[in-house]
Length: 321
Ligand SMILES: [Zn+2]
Ligand SMILES: [Zn+2]
Image (cartoon, rainbow, N blue to C red; front, side, top):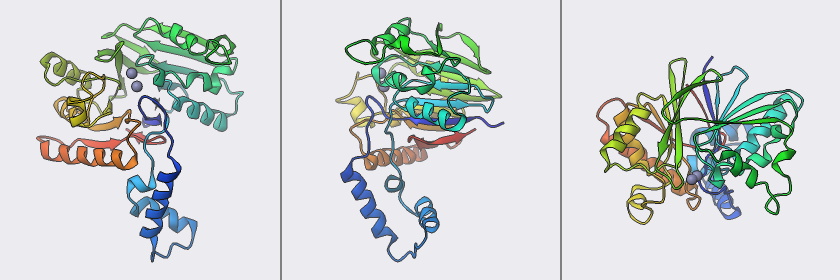
């Protein structure tokens, strides 16, 4: 069965929603574009939206903060990060299976910055007895951080209210582990308080989840380490929060990377598909689409070997490998 990657949360730092003015602008653009197209049924209109409308008009990027599911179709749930997107993931499981079906969840945490853990108190399956949740990470303070965000007076429901069994597993970076059918290896990344990327291998396919990492192309060891970690990946989910101009000027040392660094590292590593992830909350859809198109163009002009596919993540995006 094919492996699927499902993006439940793709925004960085803080969740954002599409505001009224932006929605109105999208509707106005769509109405103007649709004039004379004879879209007199919802089916025709939907097909036209999917095929003809600009992506930034028909979609919205980001929304919830980081949460990505890896699905091998075997009933095991593997998730990277517990940003606000995990609430939508939990709701989907309840809608599909009902709350009484018992499940196992394997969660890999990049780090415990708030945008990567804030969804956990809203993760429905954590309140259901019989569910098992194992939380893996290379930081030793994960349990403390998750408990603390639910302590009074910050949150009304304490961590101990969860009825599911919750276990914490500390991983050693650089060592490979077998978890739920995947071989997983963590790697230390340059970020305030440290973060860890994860390389997942299964059925000959490689998926790298690397968020909240400031890659420095001027440090050869760092470049080599990242390229080895990304080597021949089928999919690299990459923290491309900034444009290159931002990353090398005002936002240097802010702990995130740019779209250009993403392309260069993926090319060096021979990766096949790059997903721009952890979008800057100040960027609207037009701005993110512009960064995406610049990235596509940069990939084209800098290409020396095989083409690298480039996508910009949005909540609800699914990629099949
Ligand atoms: Zn983050
Ligand atoms: Zn962070």
